[in-house]
Image: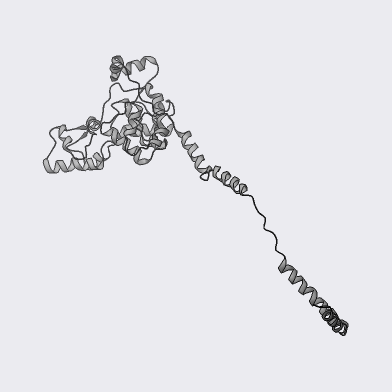
Length: 298
């Protein structure tokens, strides 16, 4: 404003009543405050570019997939692993090593069809077993050592039984009761009862390795007391392939329900079996003939 206008403005104000003057002054102060606030613009704080780069690198170094629970489970799985022989290990033992159920059953099926693992690397040909899974169990594979002619001869049951008897106390696997089996390493009342029950269902053991087939008995435990077992003169209970009912056949551990059906249907269609070799014509016999033949008769 010009000087004359200011004087006029001031004279007009002085003509007001005191209360009016105070109101005008308050309005002037509020107006100036609003103008001042609008004109004030705080400077944006600039953050150096290197600060962002440092943070980016730090985040990149962090493992975003870190999962303490998963690592704990992995550690527990590793601690449960034990040495095993892929030629004799049960499904439970194989799954205890961290293998999938399907892979474990594939290994059993491979063995049942006559397959055998002669070296560790043979495990790689199992369908479904990944390279990572093989690497995880490779150090636990324990195959039977290759022997010379003398050791091959030692596979004869009578020779092995004699050598065991000379080395100390032994257990006749077809005569021992639960209390005697409990004397073996790692065998308590529960497993002892299962061994005796398995023997009863089979109709007796005809070779020592059958004890290791007992459900729930780990191969690593079996291998530790195997040398204490003998099977000098097995007397097996046999089923009549021509007279046994479907229920009796299917109840045998080595005869599946499908094979039991095949036997009964063959009898109904062709009459009685005249030769045990006729079983090889059955659809579901697979490679189990050598296992079953000991427990069947015409």
